Image (spheres, helix red, strand yellow):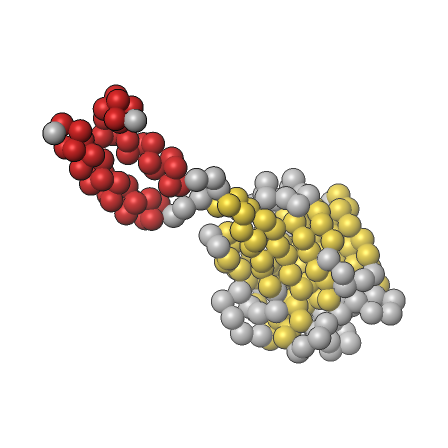
Length: 208
């Protein structure tokens, strides 16, 4: 063992110990909850709002053919939690046919699959999720359609996800994914400083 340490030298020991200490990357779940206006609060969120979680961001924008809606965040409990639109004629402030919410997911692309939950989908309510590379687009490649509030997964490759209703009115509840994480750089700096001191002590010990 002493011969190995001598051959490695101080910096070799540092590299070896950093490799051991950092270990493999571990998984973390990132969840965007849409029952608020990005930075917090409910009700009208304006034409767009940004959600930031764990170093990732999603920009939600209210869209409608030929006009601009406003986003509306609901946190009324049960299945009445999520992001909708002010254009809902029923007064429920939810997503209705002909209107949609566009999510800019450029910062999370590659972290698929994405798990999405729709809310307030009862009776004849139905929804559709599609992807596109065009901002404000009213058409694209359909990824998923449904009528329930259970979670489902999609693996988009385009910059935007569009969420609309095909019948009734619905809410966008959440989006989540699992990503691999590594130790924070600041943590590695502190760890490296300590190990440098340890490596120096080992070298002095070996010279004795």
